Length: 104
Image (cartoon, rainbow, N blue to C red; front, side):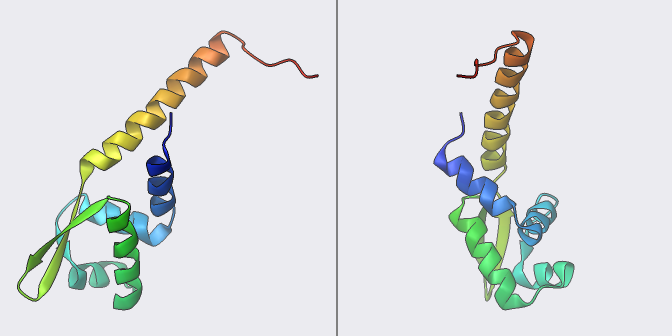
């Protein structure tokens, strides 16, 4: 069953730029400067998207001098994948049982 935290996570990942950021961070830890270069987004826009991802628990930060590095938290994505996988299993059982509610 999906929780409200899963709902927040899905919403956070629903934006194309945020999904791009997550995809980039899956390959390496990057600072804001790298993410600006990779995405072409303005720094203020990117910072807002990174805040949403931080608040959803998708990324964590690591200060390094005057830079802030961002790292993906894979366990958060794995949790969402598990919840979605459980829904798929339930749906397969429902289809196999031909379970449907009668109309009134």
